Length: 203
Image 1 (cartoon, rainbow, N blue to C red):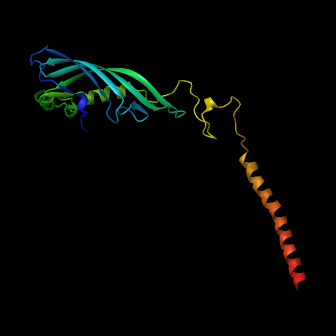
Image 2: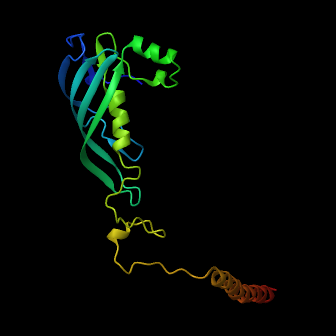
């Protein structure tokens, strides 16, 4: 996935000595697909990130805080959701040498480690992981949301308390069909008799 320029941090001025610190502040916009299926950061919406970068022997430790504007839908009634949230994340971005050492030691997840670039560090993957973990698996407009009416599809919270739909027993529905056929038969016979009478008169 392509990096979002607004989340790529320049680390040229981070001293290459253990314990050196650089503080950053990013006031940018959220990239696409930052979140889960039903709720996530609104693409192009405001995204503010503050982080502390600490140089370590095997990489850079990032302790960050992000303010994100979320949008999505309630899984029960499909009402639009809009709210702001704050997430935090602590991630170690490994140098290429440290990542290769991890792989050599048999670390099966070495390919998934966050990496430090030559002169920059991309916060987007760490932010994505942190946000997905912080989001509700099934977002709701409120905990006691009643959902949708199974018959008409309207939101139950917008309908009167006595809202209901008359449901006939399927056995009565079948009987009603038979009665309708029985009622139609005499009418068809009468129409045939009338047609025959007209034919006799014409002769």
